Amino acid sequence: METLMSNWLNPVEKTPEKYIFPAHQRPGSQPFPVMNDIPLIDLQHPNPQHIIDRIIDACQRFGIFQVINHGIPASLMEETMAVMKGFFSGPAEHKASLYSTDLAKKCRIYSSTLNYDSEDFHYWRDNLTHHCHPVHDHIHLWPHHPPTYRQVVGEYAVETRKLMVRILEAICEGLGLKPDYLEGKMTKTQLLSVNHHIPCPDPSLTLGMPQHTDPNLITILQQCSVPGLHVFRHHQWMDVPSDPTAFLVVPGLQLKVMSNGRFRSPIHRVMTHQEEARTTIGTFLIPSNEIVIEPAGDSPAVYRGFTYGEFFRCFTRSNCDADTALAYFQTDSKSPTLLK
Image: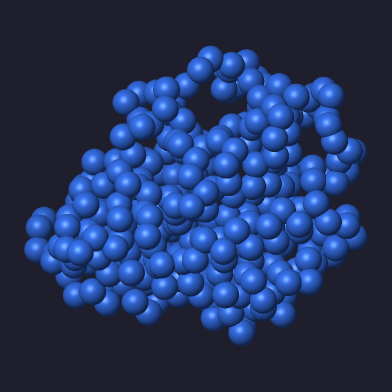
């Protein structure tokens, strides 16, 4: 069977056995409650302090929020989404030239996870990931199909970085820090990660992505009109409304540490859809491996300082379990084994 799902003949009439999860891991077919109270923040509000207060409150109480009037033209968002859909629906040979499960590759497409060859079950997705900053250092590695990919995505990468830096500046001010506290090595790497999920014959049997927490600094997500994102809140999975004109903002675990545990970083997963394909565009800001992450401010530190490289090794060796990884770096931690 062709590894990349976007190359399969549609519609898929039966879920392949390798994609059917054990009964206790399946999402099931029950209706999920909708997270209708997710904060919606207008970045053009006339009072800058109001924006800062809303962002800090959202980070503390929800760990997720949406922004509107964010300054990125709707036309650019639509063009970028169209380019991504064109890439996944494009010729198999173009995608094959970029296929890799090597984490060191700075532009790669793969299916399910990077452990595709060894995992027991596959997730229902293809993923395109590439580095974005600075654009001129990486653009030559990007797809050249569709023909407008590099031009459109290059502009999109610049604009999304500006937006994320603006949100981080607001967070810093809300925490009593200088606005540029997180510039430089704290936001060194910018990744674009695009998930594409073809229609699934039975969404109750499989998942588009595993439940996880983002280990990086901050993520923004452009969704399409097809729902699928779930957040674990109030001891249950909840459906996040899909607004293609807004950006969904997810503080990563490094912001949780930097805020000394005040911020939330939510567990989330992705469901599949029976009738429509779903494409989402995520942009991640990631610290350099050498930069030291530690709580900011004068309060007694909940976490000890660590490099991002140390944290990421710990995170992956704990099977990407956020609580286990964070517990290792708590100031009262007595668990020294994860980095060996």
